[in-house]
Amino acid sequence: RWSVSKSQTDLQAAARKLGHELGTIRAIEPLTFTPQGRVKTLKITGSAGSAEVDGNKFRFAAGLNSTLWKAKATGSGASRSFTFDGGGWGHGLGMSQYGARQMAADGKPAEAIIKHFYAGVAIESLSPAPTAQ
Image (tube, rainbow, N blue to C red; front, side, top):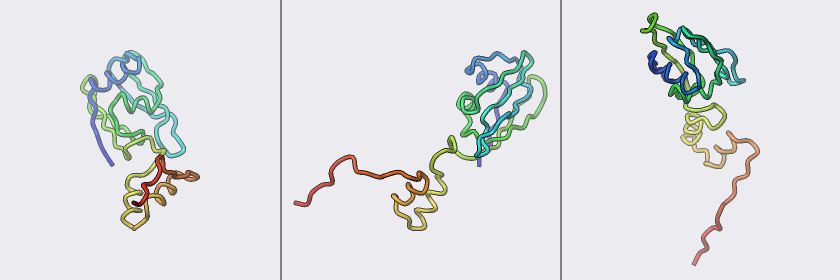
């Protein structure tokens, strides 16, 4: 789990990176979610307009760890900031770092861990194995 606060300056810069001049940010509202519960699209409302943006693009523009978050506003006007409480460290489509770590601690070999998170994969060597002399 993680929590990070973003100021007006931070969020206005993020909106600009996404091509939007929105003025003072008033609200950040998730609109749609992935099947895993991550923010897919969101609406940013400011004093100069609003914009619907992609959740993953917003994640990178705002410097968030993942797209799994909830935003809470504090303060008002130009001093309003937003706290993002979230979880995870990526896009939510791959290997769980904590799950893989626990499987390794339980004695599972690397191949079993990889096949657990990536069903149907084949693990192959990219170079020939060394031969005994």
